[in-house]
Image (cartoon, rainbow over all chains, first blue to last red; front, side, top):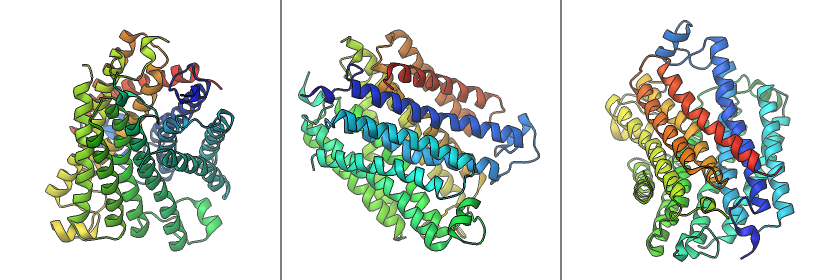
Length: 151
Length: 151
Length: 151
C-alpha cells in the first residue's frame, strides 16, 4: 500500500488536501457573514421575527444586493462541496503528489477569484472562466475516482 | 479489524462506494451545464453583467425552463451529499458487502431516474417514487451510523 | 501515530463524530419530509405535474409556510455539511478527545435548537444565537484544519 493512500496528516498530500479544503470551506462559510451584512445594512429580511428585531418595513424577497451574495454562496455549495467529496476519494487513488497538489491549488485559487468576480460584478467572461477552471478540476477528479472504483 | 473497515481502494466495498459516489456527484455537477444551456438558449440571466455579455433584455427571475433544472439540482444537493457523507461512515460499520453494494447501486439508479423524471416532466407519482427510494436508502444508512456511533 | 488519528469505529472519538454527524445529517434529511407535509396540507406545488396529481389550483411560488421550512433546510445545508467535512479532517489533527467531543455535542445541540427557533418563529435573537453557536464551532474547526495542513 503506497504512502499516498493514507488519510492522515503524516501523508504530505493529505496535508495539502486538508489545507486547501479548509480554505475553500472557510471561504464558503464566510458568505453567511456577507449575506448577514447585506441584510443588516439594507434592512432586507425575509422573516417577520427578523423585521421585528432589526427594523425594516416588511419582509422582502428578491433584493439584488442580498441575492447576489446568496447566488455566490449557492455556487460555492454546488462546486466546493463536490470538490471536497471527490478529493477524499481522489487522494486514495495514489495520484502523483505534485500533480494532485497542483489541482488542489488551482481549484482553491479559481474559487477565490470566482467570488471576487461575482461580488464585484466584474464583466464577463471573467466569472465564467474562474467557474470553468474549478469545474474542470472537479470533473477530472470525478472521472479519476469513477475509473479507480468498482462497478 | 475487519477488512471492510478500511477506507482504501484495496477494499472492494470502498471501490464500489467510490464508483457510485463519483457517479452521483458527477451527475449533480452536470446539472450546472444543463442550467447554463437553459440560460443561454432562452436568454434568461439574473446578473446584469451576464446580460451585457450574452444578450437578452433584462435580468429575469423565475423562468420555468431554468427553474426546473435548478430545482432538480437543489434536490441532488439535498440528497446526494448526505448519501456520500453517510456512506463514508457506513462502510466503516463493517456492513455485509453484498448488502451495502446493493444499497449503493439502488441509490445511484434511483437518483438517475429521479433526474429523468424531473427534467422530462413525467407524470407523478414516478418522480416521488424515485425520490423515496433514494431517501429510504440514505435514511437507513443514517440509522445504521447513529447506532454504530457513541453518544 | 496516535490512536485518535484513525478513521475507525474502534476509535472512540470517531464513534462520537459518527453519532453526532449522523444525527445532524438525519435532521437535515427530515426537512424534506416537513417541506412535503407543508406542500401537501397547503396544496402549494411548483411543478405542473405535481398539481395534476395532488390537486391545488396552479403552480405557486413563494408561499410563506413552505418557504420558511425551505430556508431552514438551506441553512442546514450551508452549515451542517461544512461541519461534517471539517470534522473528518479535524479528528485526524489529534485533538483532545474530551474537547473535540464537546464541540461535536455543542454543534449538534445548537443545530437542533436552530431548527426549533426557525420553524416555531421564536422571536430573535434566539435563532441568531443558535446559529452563531454552531458557526463558531465550525469556524474553529476550519482554522484548526488549515493550521494542521500544508500550504
